[in-house]
View 1: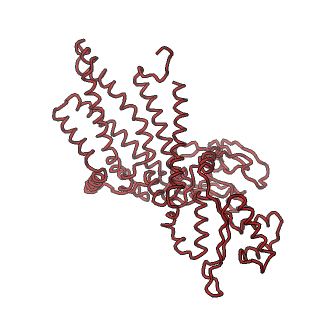
View 2: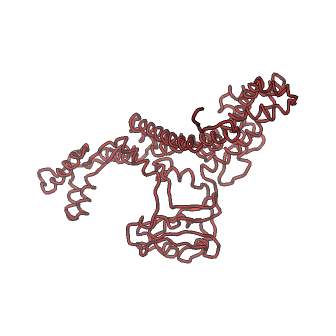
Length: 525
């Protein structure tokens, strides 16, 4: 079994890498990168050269290319002491218009061009767009170098940056004595509540390990998962955080800040991240009264669940409901083959398969609305009844699918030789069904349980759209519509990982249910 699992893990990781590489290839090589501006209001408002440089800046953010602007090159020279502030300002102002009239500034243009051409960059020179002697709006001259990023480099950067590890040397500026400290009484609770925590100084996150009242109750920031930043769907936020951060209205409670101030607030001190100069350079009483160092960038408590949380609640309840209802009905259909119960079950199965899911989801939404059930999610005034219709809509196809396959497997087993021997041995039909037929027919059904459970994390696209569920199901479709490359790649990786894990867990569960199944090989067999 161990050898099999290791082999499965290796092959699974290779499969995940291949899937992500294919998605990257499709996004960055086959799709028109101009489409990312289709819903960009900033782009439509810009004109002339300003629009052109904005395009390249956005392409750099979306991972299409490396971009070096002339002003950035001059800033490097200024930081290195090779030019002074006056030269920097004049060179930036003149740009490529310096020419022979200003040879002392034109030489920097030539140096920039030669340097980046030698490194394989394409040099782009945009002359001033003028109306007579006046430069048009957005028509200032531009000089920059750009180079497409190879797929191999992009993939290497992505995969090597998935995990980041916090440490006491993460902050580069002087923070005093660096180190970790452990306490049994978390200062975020005023130092009066027993709550162990590990805090750092010099680390990016103030809290590296802590406890709170939110599932899974124990949290850590030692290792962070980076699936890729969003640029449109949830601007500036990593895909992993987008899926796991709580949503909804602010949730306030009594907070004791590091400076000693206690007040009712939604600030979550456990999320404090180092913000360079935020305390030392601040004259705001709001900062000074609450914090004692630069760990001032904090998140907030929200009243709702995360996207994955909403999807998982709906998904896992629908999975449990599907198995609880479908297995007895599937058994009954097999035992009463061609009888009334079998015919009714077959009609239901055919209906679910034949009718588009969108149609019966809207049908049940309309029926539920007639009985006063909520037909959309409301995070501002949540009630348990708003889960009913999405759960039922999501469970219906699963029930039909399980009924169909269990009936088929059991009927196949009923015609097996071992069943005939069991009957000849005097076993009753009930015993034969429970101890033999069901056990063997359930083996392939069992294999799908981990996939169903883990699939709850990714949500259901159609169901969540119809009922306006703030879950994970819409994330990928929204990212595709907005050409949000970071989210597309990140969600693809997440889906691929869940698929590989569900197959492995399904194999393990199947071998537990049926000891005859072995994934180890022995010599001579």
